[in-house]
Length: 279
Image (spheres, rainbow, N blue to C red):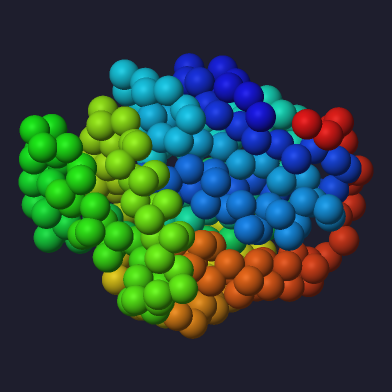
């Protein structure tokens, strides 16, 4: 794990190393590569797993600019090239999925397969612009704590939020939200809110694609994800029962099983596997 200089930013990168085919995991808004910890733990024995934190989120320092989806896509492409990964299996959740769609459509040589979780190809719904802009402005004064409950409801489905056995998990996630850098939070959120639609580019995606959608996702309802899947040639859509907008943590075993089956069903890779020493 290290901070790497990538495309004019410093990004926190964790690389399992090894000789397996590389999987690059891109996280959702407000979180970090740690949201894929269950999947990395299950897959790292057979795949080289790389997670990274977007600008101003997780362990990556805040940058003055570059939070728009086009720049974040360029960051992801530059990271793949800098690590000499070749064509990767790219897994993107929500904001990470916005990036993954652009990467697969614009740099197809870098994407061997694509998994899109709780994401869509349309712009942010108009109502969210007002709601989240007000929240961001108020957070400048009072901090994020008064809004943590609302954020948790957007990020997680009712089965996770109401399960008494998972109270400690919820408390830990709330602590992560409260630890977010306020400047990074505002800039990253505005990058998501102001993103442009990419639906017109989806037909250019040729990588095998799996679209997963939390059945209880209220932030990106399954119908939006299904519409995106229908526009990607050959894409397969699958619901994750009981999950909301953060299925990798809410229903980690189901997500891991879906990714594992998807990857195992791909045709054998023709070129040699890039090797890297264990970190």
